[in-house]
Length: 268
Image (cartoon, rainbow, N blue to C red; front, side, top):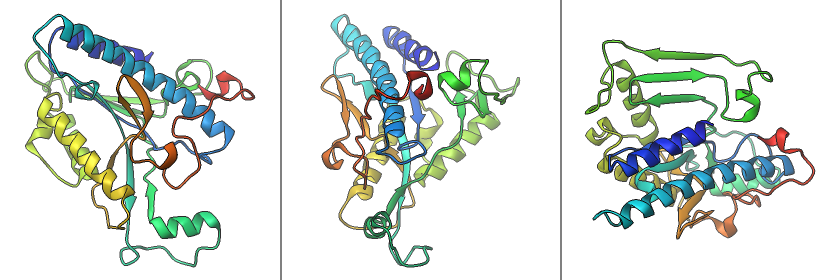
């Protein structure tokens, strides 16, 4: 329901012609061998969720543009998914030993890998910060399966209003996180719902993706990347720039594949 609630809030803001942005950071792929059946099954259901969110936002935008003077609006103006990755030259590497397996040899050549995101955190309007152990899946949120814990932080003296987000310690915390993963501090970060901020963050991610996938190996200090899937022409597809629609340096389908062996409850 978390994904549904976020999507509904975006659609409400679109209808009200109000600026609003949701930034979602996920692992490039979850723990496990990326082309294994279990991982592909997880990627499939994750893709189905992302696609449903994008489609609802797309429909809301189409309705708004058909009934207002607003034109040229894109889903990425309101909703974006990202991941983290890095790349290092041999001179900047701390690797030891000689590659022996085929995977090690490939990684030694491309010198890139994802930075795995294990955090479970949500920051809302820089007013509330939730940090815990629960993943956004049925297993964690069911209430009678896995045991989870969560901490919620907020400051009564620093609350969001109709005209502004909060500007307390949570605001500073988010700015610190954004500066850490983008390797820069920019005044546009102070207003994350603004079109200027959304465009800046997406441009940083796109620039990093070109470095990450490029022929030339470079030392990356900015690690924000666009998620391997993108929504264009009304459809969710593997991101342009991926080779054969596969996750970088793997034979794994970025879209995932539905498992006909593992039950759905194991993968959601």
